View (cartoon, rainbow, N blue to C red):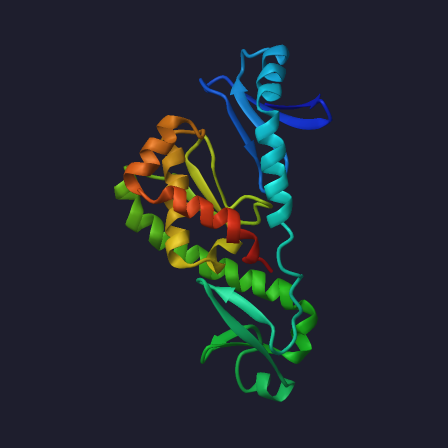
Length: 236
């Protein structure tokens, strides 16, 4: 369950779990302070932990603010660039006549996205739909390819808008990915897949989780550093 504490001007989200044995303090992608704790831990004990980590928290929040500006919102006009599997493709708006002779929606062809001019006002919805379809196909293939390495069998795979999270794993073994995942370079997608598959065994970010992830992806720290520096660039 989740609760919130005010500690010296900080709002801290507390996530309790009867299954958790350790404490995990993080800054989420939205800049929120989150502490995951065993259910039996008292409020006084949680406050003591947070106060002991305040220097780290403020430093991390400062880094987050500096890197979270991200790119400006996309404009659905000719020449705008859109990522797909780590590569940026330019958009070209085409006339209604040209659209009538081809697709009536968004198309990636000859290293360029094409969109009928009449549909430009719905550009974001069409891109999200297109990305969701490709993400479902691509990620399912990568899960099949990597699940043996992780010795993990997900109950189901889903693509949806997860807000600030790239992925999620439920306690029932279903793994979810943000549709934006398909914008990333393939090697980064593979890392996210392994990360969520590891959560099937370890529903936390404990040392046991990272040891399991390290065995499958020895360069996991480099991946995480890349996401901290570049993840916000891959947006719509």
